[in-house]
Length: 318
Image (cartoon, rainbow, N blue to C red):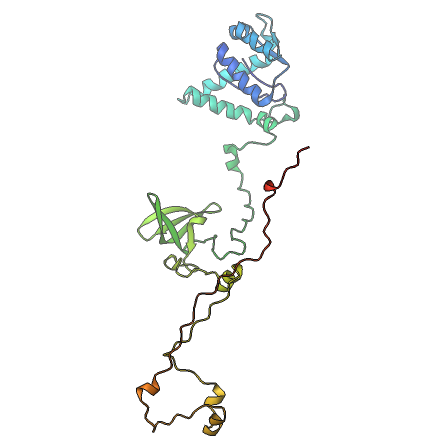
């Protein structure tokens, strides 16, 4: 059997038993939709009760050709002849039947066909584009489009590296990982790199698994973390900032204007003049005892208006 859309010349092969043929057609119909007409020869797989029930259930009109008149299904017969001659020549190079089948189908589907609308290949008619083959190697490689920037917007971590860049790479051991210094050897793809680490290993790492040694040091990671200002916390809880109590052992610092003033000026401000020639007893030197000030601010309650939830309101029954 040759399963083909007439305008595409697309060939699909499989085993030719009745069950296998129905399964193959069901798979093709799931991708391309149900046909209105199906033409086949008089093989037992097409005249069986299972195949008749399959066509009737799916609303497909099944027509068979006249016995012993292959011209009625000339398109399929011509393909069978082409297939047999091609596979025989391919197998002459000691290829297996599966390899010969794949080589033939690849060549047949990528060759322009005059029977296809527009004279294109069956694959181009099926997919709307030319599929790539090894013949593309005869053409010069197309110019590569400019690579997009892989830098993070507003970020400080470098995500694009060049060969010989000094980086830190993630090394995984079990369920843990650590940073290891290394050198970028080559760039593979857009965000993939090969890195030579200092313990004599070659790694394939994603850009997210690499950090530039010039921008960041993992040994200092987490040493300095931003702290939330105390004023923001106090304002959020409506608390006043605590004032430290005066230490009785700390000497009182006089105003700068009084320190620089003359003895007469200090006397006029009520500041006694300390003479080093007058000895003082320990009782006179001891500062007066003072009560320690409380460092804990007073508790302040929120003054917002509190309303009970609506589910606790009274219900009105009519």
